[in-house]
Image (tube, rainbow, N blue to C red; front, side):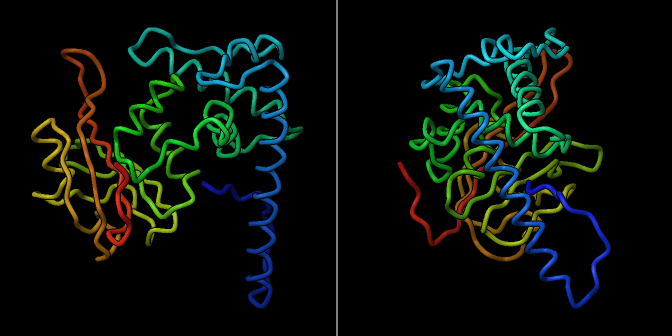
Length: 245
């Protein structure tokens, strides 16, 4: 999720230096944003989950328009408020990915989420989503982003072509997983979609090479009766790592 903050024509001989500069600039922007958001949170005594983002937003005069008529209303509103706060935290912070990252950091700060780990599996995602009052997808992405260990989080949807990866976040655990990668029949994600239960296996990630991973997947349908959309979430970590219990 590292945003491209610097855009300019790069001479081939200077490409490595330019890429390093982009990485440094992106890291600096994130750390500045984290510092501002952490200061705001502590200033208002927000030292436990869930963060009272409504209070922080009211103090800053932030009130984004959100659609509250859906089952994900609370999580959607909280993330929208946190995103708007991140946008105001740094002058000129218009990059959407940076603001999304800032919203995640505000709602799930490092100092309050150290006990949630990706290698604890989807129960850690469920627990963080419940404790922080965020969506399962936001919680899964945050676990991989801040965990400091190789891991991957995948979201798959049913399409006309079958079960496909909608998006994935891979951290130090192999090549990126392409959007739209097909989910192989018989794989742990396909079994989770079919059974509705939590499924586990050691296998390669879809579209991600041949390296074996511990993969845990479960179906979490979205919507209400008559308008339900199939969604499968999965956490994975390299097979050489021991899973936490």
